[in-house]
Image (tube, rainbow, N blue to C red; front, side, top):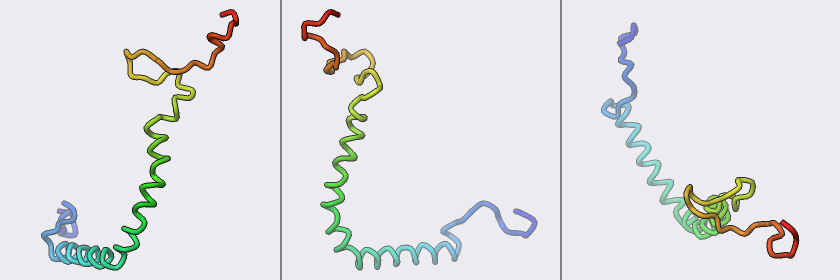
Length: 91
């Protein structure tokens, strides 16, 4: 306890204020869902479609530009080289 006589343990949902807050948040969540469900579910296909390029970039890791490789340690690198291999030039 601190000098004011109140506990400093933190917020508890067992306190009357905690119960009131939990009830308020539950009711607010219910009404927000009921009022905006059509908008949220209507936008879901577009959100998934727009997420595809972002997922593509994260899955490919930027296509390995500048990192000198790509695979896991111990794996052979079968990526295409940007050199002049097979073009008749001297190596």
